[in-house]
Length: 316
Image 1 (cartoon, rainbow, N blue to C red):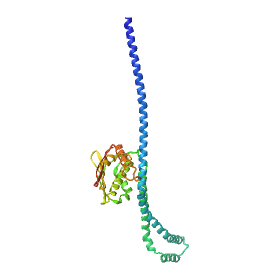
Image 2: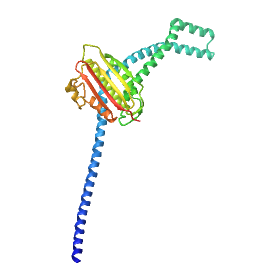
Image 3: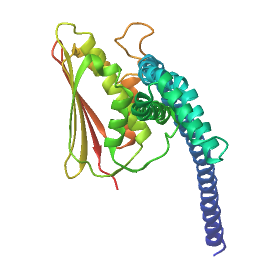
Image 4: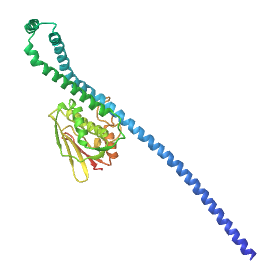
């Protein structure tokens, strides 16, 4: 009986030791897994921050490309605003004299005959009827020019702003329309055709979608410019089915060979001359679509052009 007790105790102690070892091992593994998970979360957060920084850097690089066209777009209304202000400044003394005479007449500090004399002299020295007819056009054109400049600056600000982590229910068409206005001057070398259905609202990041449209359209424009034999044409299609929104950008430009297609989404890959491209455009488009749980497809043939198709699931 004593021997049985001894054997039982020995087995119990052996089992307890093994259990303690397993618990210690499990605790060590759990601690190591927890630390590894923390490090992974920190690295993931670092990658996300780097991605935001990279996105913003690409935006700034794109703004540099757009700057010449934007300057031209601003200079056009600025020129006639300056001209209109000069015209208003020229007729300002006439208006000031007229208002002073009116005030003096109301205050009874001048007589009717004196008022008639002032008005007669003003009319003799200036074409009052022309001023009356012209003043509305001068003011209206100036206001229109200022609104146009404000709109251009607003589009630039929207494009450059850091809203990379903001998603909201929105119509992707808004992003396309804003991009087309922003690129209006750059796309003048091409014929641009827009075919779009009414799209449903979807949960998306419009700031990121701005970058997608800018990159796709600038690439299409450059492809058309590289093919000098014919007028460049860019066709943009927005359409939808029950589950997805489709964005297609097609051009009749130079097209891409097989090797280029294999590398098109690789970071820092570019076919542009040194200093004219960052090589991040399509890589960023790819990542933005992945963030929207979407996909991108490319069809291209050398000498005939390219078709880029983006597929974005409708999210509510």
